[in-house]
Length: 106
Image (spheres, rainbow, N blue to C red):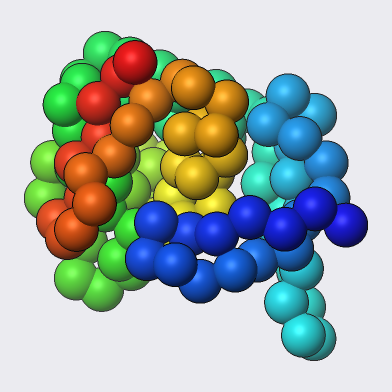
């Protein structure tokens, strides 16, 4: 199972891919991230770059990708913690090295 690291340095295990969907594994649970969610995130980064990441659930980060995921699509902003590092790895975008994390389309 591949391992990646969140932008804050926390390692995580996952299966799948950005194209086919991800399953992020935790000790006693898993988080499924569909390809449609990845597509929404890519679109937000592409159209709004530079844009705030906003992985916080409470409070939501105003004007962030996470806020859009939650407010418009009912998706937890937490998915940003796992999708963003993989988008960075593939060269799609970059992010600042400290909070608040700002994403720039490559």
